[in-house]
Image 1 (cartoon, helix red, strand yellow):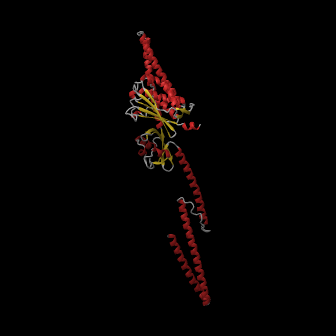
Image 2: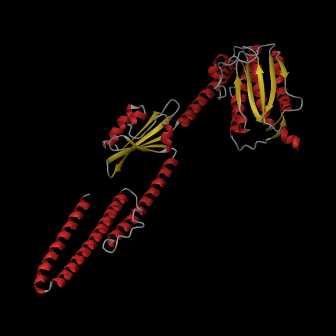
Length: 465
């Protein structure tokens, strides 16, 4: 508006100047020439004045528009719109300025593109890091985060602008962030629970920001699985020590009794029988540990091929028959006479059947019944081994596949159990692409348990061949 006002004032001053110039010239020429010549001169001067005024007016209008265009282009470049002067031709007077603005715009565009590419690369790198990263500004609030951190705190709608205490419920970590930002310490290490099922190692380190003073980075490394494996290792050592200590203590005691002079022949035989029994139990524990180590090795040369599950069950039953006869437990074989055909390693599948049947026989009461059946559906064969025992409490059903874990009320009551059979079954079936689970109590009674496991079906392959 101010540019237009100045333009109007300039135009009026120019018209008045030309008008008075024409009057002055007419007064001069009135003394030298006749009236007709004077009129002609007046008309010429006035016409020339108006022509000059119109030319200047056109120039001023065009210049004003060019200046406005250049000003708008400069403002647009400041806002990141670098294509404002693509089709603009301001004329020779303002062309150098327009060229400079256009060149500046091109440089700005190149810099913006470079910065955008670098930002995209940096975000890709940060999002590819498995550790969660939180960047704190100088005021101690979260300024940015990577994808892993946003996944860890998925329940928080927006991380930016929050204090660390709002996302990690740990006053200790909040205090550590304050000390790092205050330059009292350079870094801080600790562990913190991020939710009920996530434990992280937290590393806070100070970084220097050129614009906002000092900031900090919080790195979150998920150690949940590591802690679980540490607990499994501790439990394994404790359970293995417990299982081996019991027979060793018995062997030591009865050996000392044999070495004493106060024993007769019958006592000696009893001691030797107990020593032999405990030695056999230790050998079984060691063999099961070796078997578990082999099945946990995925490159152990497993020979997976189509096998008849009924034939495998028959082989396993030969080893379990003496225990069944001793307890007078009946076996109900519900498997088809021919099949089902599954993809499995024959010897390892025998081990699975044997472990499950031995457990069923061990915990079934005298005169009880053990049932084996199968169902084929969707390219998988599901096999069940059921017993009529006391069943397994709900709270223990997820842990019975751990090494050395046994239901507490049955621990020590049944001889011959090492607590490794179900762990071996789980690893064998995992290597075969199958799963195993337990249902207790059984659906058809108020007690008992049924162990189900799945294997890939090979019926179609056999029929095709």
